[in-house]
Image 1 (cartoon, helix red, strand yellow):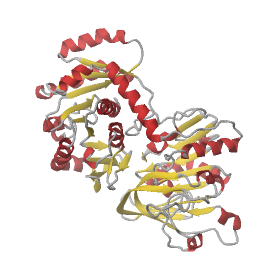
Image 2 (cartoon, rainbow, N blue to C red; image 1 turned 180 degrees about the horizontal axis):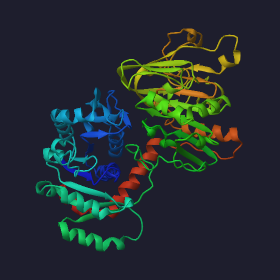
Image 3 (cartoon, rainbow, N blue to C red; image 1 turned 30 degrees about the vertical axis):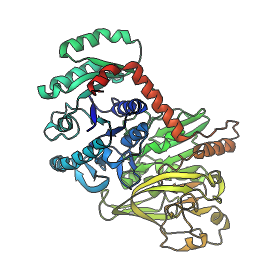
Length: 525
């Protein structure tokens, strides 16, 4: 069986996911067969495995750090919040049901066999498993039914590193308070503390570290400096989701209340002269060159929110002026004429869309989960021709079917020239922006189902990762720069190579700032 080490935190957003990723990278570089594991993840950022199963994006990222393919066994339970009091419960990669928090709390212990089966399969094929907890083990109101922190540590007999975030302040209170609230048998599992996201002179921490170690008898095994890495993070607590200042090229992502899969836009980060802003008010559209509507776990509620804050009307005006608008997944659904939810999957009812694309969406219980590979066709219209014939490697996660309800009349020649339907046929070339072999004349059919479309300056698609293919983001940025008369040009960066360098930076940092000899001792290496 594999050796195991668990990383728990004093709260959310202390850096557990990246610490696990760094450890995975570090030990996989040493030749060990390493895998990540998280029994239960609550996040709207998710990923589809090759088998068409859904897991948390963080575990897919950690698998990439290990240099292995993501597996559903790495995250057997995923909770995707649909409201303030309920979530979609995904078990072994497939949706089980929508549950209110209290109902799930009473139900989740029945999932322990599924958790243990997944863990045992991973452990049987690997040398080391790095396990990530969730939230805090000191959430004493939830401890009785815990399956993700100390409850899991007991089930798999795992030693625990406890991590605190000093960037938020009060790190010694975080660590000591968490330890103090645990029963003695759980305290004994903690083999070391880690102080994360530190800025400044580390010697100033020495008196606090000495006092903490004296009080609890547990060593501080690392003080990790703050790192500004471009690595996919888990959820909307990410401090990257901010509204910064516009730059030479300005990309504005609408920060929806139920935004999902913001990792679609990581490819635009860290670019000279490019600002990637997440905005929540109409006045922040200002001089955007591209407005993106991201995925959503509650499309109708987020549509209504955009109308309430004035964003819906401003986006319509922006598109009417020829401004570039892209919608992905839920954002694509919002760009149409209407979104209907007759089964109450997201609260029920029907909501008028932005009216920028001639389709409507009917939400259905069946969930589309698939990886998508192909390339853009050679006849994309207008601005979007910058993506012609480029490769695509993404995935779909959505509920609902989208159908055409209107098409530019034959006498409006200009509109027809600006129109492309992105009807998907897996593993073939893209007719439009996703896949397909649909002839444009067939688009007159009222019942045609579509996986995406382009009309003028507006692009919509169900495919996550549409900009991730080698050169895609750069082609888009270069086309925007040319449109604005800028001299800046962007060279393609291979996504896997770039991510690998980020993981290596992270692993090198852990090597330098953590007591690796003690970590090896804990792992019995």
